[in-house]
Amino acid sequence: MEITYVRDQKPMENVHKVDAWKIYDKPSAQVIAMKLHPGDFLKPHKTPVDVFFYVLEGKGIVRIGDEQNEVEKDCIIHSPAKIIHSWTNNSNSLLRILIVKTPNPGYNK
Image (tube, one colour):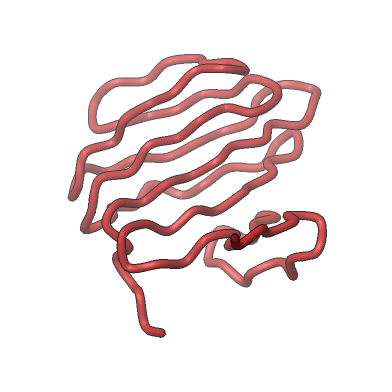
């Protein structure tokens, strides 16, 4: 059995300059835990694989392609491969998101 404690993981550097931890990294999927503090955002970008986001805490604005919605805790958002997506925390509280990429676009172990 493999158990990972997010609290024990080191933050990963990223172009968005937000708090993020790679917590699962296998050929089948990559999982990242991310915190967006009030005013933080993920720049619009594409991924070569499907992604889904699970909102663990808080609320924020997600944009997938031409669509934009305010979402909150306990919802899942699907972002198809090669479609621009972004996030903005326009609230006064922390936004925590679990990001799952399938298959792992950068598996190199």
